[in-house]
Length: 148
Image 1 (tube, rainbow, N blue to C red):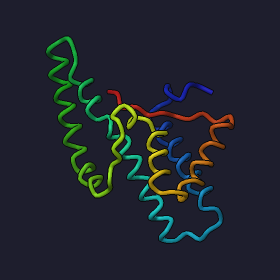
Image 2 (tube, one colour):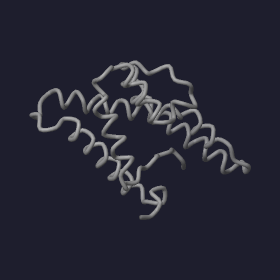
Image 3 (tube, rainbow, N blue to C red):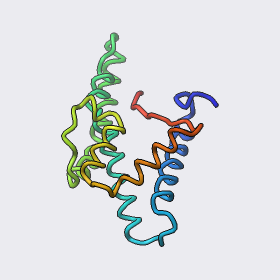
Image 4 (cartoon, one colour):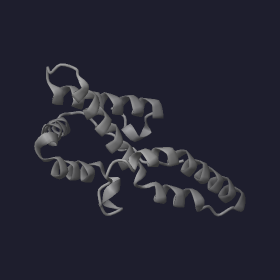
């Protein structure tokens, strides 16, 4: 199988959605679909969004560093737009406590998973064990980093 980092963005997104759905379904077992599932899904979405926005300063810094003035000006403009687009998401995320992880640790989903497990006790243990089973299989996992 090709390197997932070379996949088109839509394929990467579809694969990520598949992995998330699979984790939810395996964690829920044959339980009825109820409000608990919606709450569980909402928490997962917020956690993923929070984790993906923790490296926002690094992304903006990368966008602003170019040698030519024309490229730098265009990149700074894009970075400002990107920052503006995330303001609404960040407002929503402020409703949920963001862990006090080291900025370098916060960019790794495993660190978030560890924090959530410690924070929620055994409620996330089943999801963690599902993730470790998947990692031992032949499936490939995709780490998404924000580049432009």
